[in-house]
Image 1 (spheres, rainbow, N blue to C red):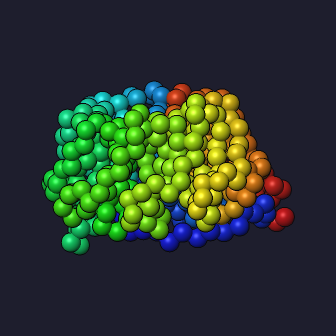
Image 2 (cartoon, helix red, strand yellow):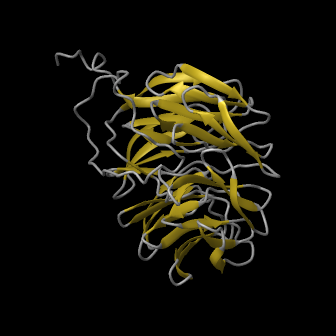
Image 3 (cartoon, helix red, strand yellow):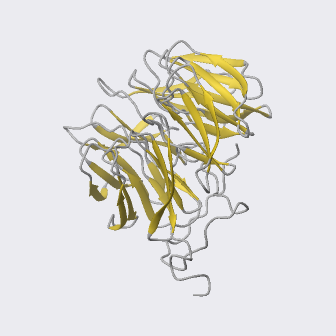
Length: 385
């Protein structure tokens, strides 16, 4: 998967487009943070208000964030299945049986969907049919998504495991290229920038690896009880992430030093951030979405939620899309955090949203997958209006 061109367009209220036809499938959101740098920025626009366009009921609760690519939505479930749904209608395309529950978000690349399972297996499936292409076995559960990096012209996948290792696998057949071992669990998704891989772990260290060899280029110790449970976002040689030491931080990778820290003495930061222009956005267990200045860490605004916010935001144009643990969906103004639209799912969310072609996709702990998009023209008075 190559780095997508991100178009930042202005949020619009009108006009309302027609329903998606089969030839107008959603643009890609192929990983749970949208791109290899994990910046959490989506292309396109949101046309408000959004309405529920379809829903699908899975067999049990859904923990991971959904992803959308090639006209399909992919999401794992506690019923030991990975589902592929038509992104325009919600129709079931296929369901692949796994040996355990699936809590990791999927990654779609090169015509395949890749996902980790809690039995430690990592699967590559044909995105069109769900047929198994290959599998690789780690020694413990996989909770984070994989990422893609091209090495010597060949696509490779990097994924972390609770066996305290990060693996680099050849995408064509799953052959192991290298393994890097840490001192504790690897929970998040490794971020990719050029030929370096950056991730934080439960060993409370920010690791920077050479993608070709897997050798560690540098490591930054974060301090006692500063385990990184979420994913790191990369932009312009800086890493942005939160940790259990009750702080969200920015690290200059060239200098291997902390630039700034946004701290809360009482609560940890699990949410993975979004980075857009001068804005960095992230949730906290202090029940708030924070927007801080990317250069200084100074607070720009905050948005209160009713529960701890481990979910991650998505920036689209001049708006922020957010799903919260208590099942609220909200679209906020990027500039000041004011609420532009909201809806209540009536069910808890464990994962974050996906956003593709102006549609929001949510999967909840009751096992329901739902899509929210612009109202069809017929609802607005017909195509002649």
